[in-house]
Length: 121
Length: 470
Image 1 (cartoon, rainbow over the protein chains, first blue to last red):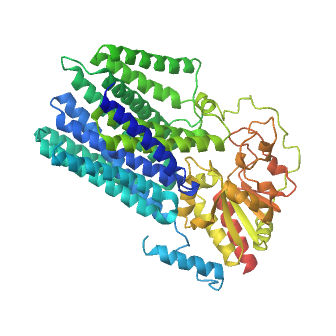
Image 2: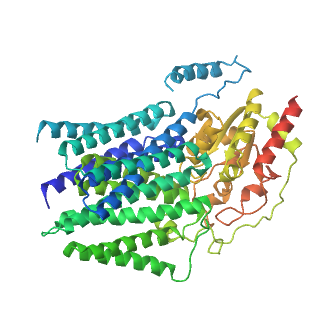
Image 3: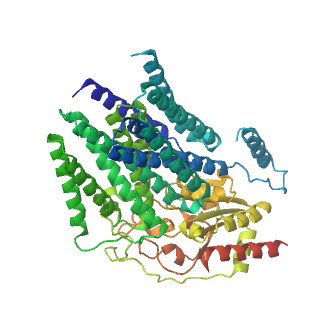
């Protein structure tokens, strides 16, 4: 048992706990984008694929590095793009806004809120 | 540590923080997109830092560069294409494929590392071997298991539980061989034996997912997601990179939480799901009240009258709605009702889809504003105030039999649809749901059945409401 391993285990356990804490606050509405976002995050294995491409020095090593890089790149690029695509669909009000009945106070409040967050979205 | 190493490590810390904050921002739909952008930023930084390491070290061969860039471009292109073109109904398959390639890449990193170390005179140290083997095992199981799951979701492989006499034995043998070969490898470095571990782990992944039925897919995808995360974290142990460990742990936590939520929503233990065979309708289910009562069917015009003169309507969508591609049709009907000032909301059961939160995405795509999508605990008290509950393609999650002991779904949390003043169920036939039992909701005196394909039925209903209110 080395100190390095102990440090790695400490980081792993703490990150797991942080993960539980942060993710338990995500509403059920967003569970599919959440899983997709988590998916993109594990695309960080691309870093591992890059590092093995850098140390490979024979045919087998290159094949492994190539497949790993292709898999990981598909994971990371696809994951982020599809998560973004999904999140773009979540709107507070229907777009374009329904022309009818703008008189209701509740509807007005929601429209205003949508405009506020709309500039960011 | 040189200044260069310091900077690189700090960039990795920043990247990991971006992942955590990105996930944190997903706690509301309003900030979720920013979260995803932040997370993307972290990823770009981590990859840039790694490029810097490789250039700084200067030991990479020309072939190494070509392999890395070609792999990155081909994989990235494929991912981009898939992400841009995928139908939202096919989202679970895509997530499964991403699980597969993520787990596969993690396993390959460990395999490469092991072969390198085993080639040296001293052989790899025990602690390195253990994490390397865990990475190979989990990664390979995730890879083959996720591909089978994606095949089942896509309909390429039968979604029904696939079992044969002795399938459990094959599954257990694969696990035993993988475990035994792993123990051997910890004691004696051997590349051929590594191959045995890989093959056995792949076989285990296949035989693990094959017997699981289509309705249990939300749990399986979540579980495989947790596996991929763990495999990536193990890869972090192998190559000594904290960013991978943190990212992997976050995904592991996310997958773990979702697995538990999904299993709870079906009131089944993980063990029970993994053993599989559920949804075959092959008995085991206790005897239940048959459709003894009268089933009342209703015509479009009558259903339209009920809807048009209601004050509050709750729509209960199930996977049948998505299967019939009726998300837009239901959104249109809801729009017509809302124009009349009727309060419309959607009651979403946690397993109303093929993956966690799937139904929400499908309705969001159909332009349904997210504040109208209500979670089970939030909407259940509201059913009593609803004039009409419109159930479309949902079955077991509305069955009041779940409240009684002794049925196949006893104890499963359900939507309290039967508390509504009246209920309209759009359904193709009286066929039972995945649990293989009759739905007592259908014989409730307050219930009217509107038989037909969800999309056609909804279009008819919308037209009828429009004619009615002119």
